[in-house]
Length: 383
Image (cartoon, rainbow, N blue to C red; front, side, top):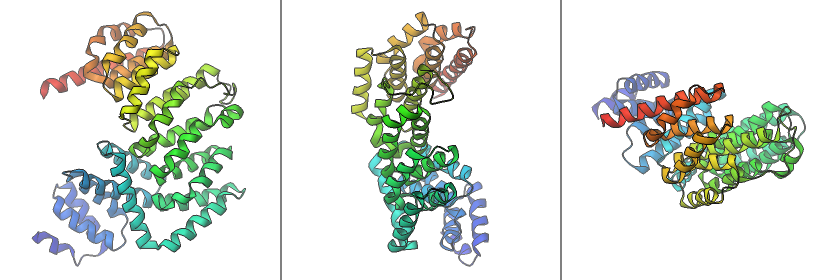
């Protein structure tokens, strides 16, 4: 491209500004050239826009893998944390079509890039420094170690055991969420540790649902990179939690805590795009066994939303809408039907009946579901 020659002599900030302007104008070739110039000169902000260019010009899996790698690099160098989170969410939405193997390939590219920039020995030193700090008592020291790991992302995988141990043993909210975020940024290599934390029986016995809930939130933010633990996490949906402390979450009842854990696990499984055959079979088996009314509704929602299997989900939804008076199950059913969209059209009449329900959460969920179904039907009609 002739235009590419215009960016070679630009200062890094000028190249960045030109790249952003070109992206906004839809000139993606010029944007890529300018942004690569800025990024090669050390302007990490360029990685954000290179990720978007790669995503918007992707024509196949290899291109999406490159985009995933750019988004990951951008999130590691971005500040403050809300910006990191926004980039990760943007990346995860783009990555839904990718297989776990493709995502791991992108993570490998990121780790190799960091090794080439920092050196393998330097990364090893940084990880060792982080691990040592994580086992010291001072919260500020541990948080400094977390920042080191966040900057290394997939290259910091050796710190996973120490992060998991500190996550399990620390009682402060901010450090706890920080440890979860560091594990999220490491990616797929940290997913098994988070899944185990989400089902940690000792923590459940001593503290209740709070810490496992936070681990599940971290898995949700990890997105498609967490697919490898889908069947493990499904165990949190069907668990009866015999060791759950009754007062672990601000005096919440046992049912409130089990519902929070089970429904959060379902939400995460939907978020990460857990469409694997083994999990679908597990969910179907759960529905056939009818273990528990709460579990039945959540499994119906999971198989209906994640697998678009209304044949399995519809009987449960019909039963709940016709007979059930429970606020949580009614609201959840409405939410699931709204997420399912067009295939939930036969339930619009029943949902309309919930708009006058005594519970505000049910009324709001039903109204939102009706709006979502109608929007999906309009979109389908315009195709």
